[in-house]
Image (cartoon, rainbow, N blue to C red; front, side, top):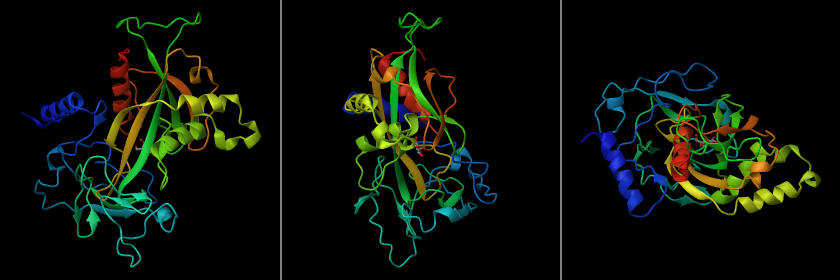
Length: 308
Ligand code: BGC
């Protein structure tokens, strides 16, 4: 049985016996976007040490492996970033809640080697933290806000070939890479994920930070109410281009669906904060999205039985 089949078998079993969302187990996952080529937006060129597919996992010998050490200069001393591992004041509590910093991974217990946490999926060709603030898991949350695509007569449109309903989701264009993405963001220390989901949507898709408090209006109340009930579709590791051997992204992706299109589905969107553009985007397998966002969108399409 190959690893791909095994991974999907485990996933199916998890779905049958409990969790109704995708939860990445660290057993034999692969990553692609954080391997090969160059580290994104580094001050100088940072080439990743080559890691072929069969050498990703730590338990496979790779004696020639010499990852490039890179930690971005701009994260040093930032309030949201950890100090260097060797700093005398730094005593991280790995795999647990460390004060209000969550150092637990969604995928299980990660290993520590020579003081450094190890990426649970495997080698990336870069060690250090890259541009991520935390050693180990860096937690994000992704709100997937959806509605049905409708005709000008307000009727739900069916896809010409699959004859299934077409889902639309709120997508933003990221300021950093210009790629289209879910309007997610980092979970602040001590923040609960539900707060992050709502806050990021307000900031990136409704430009809450660009508005004065008195401009907060009825629409905001609609969104706040709408965000009270969501369904988790993914929880785990993200194949993010910023990942390194010692720092990586994880997320919780939650679907908030406007069935009638009369709630958030009607609101005017306005890009703000880390987003330069925002729009309702049709869901389908040809979408090209940031990191592994396409997988989370696919999970929503499956759940809602929409065109894919
Ligand atoms: C983004 C999230 C994304 C996460 C992992 C965060 O910077 O805002 O949308 O899921 O990184 O890639």
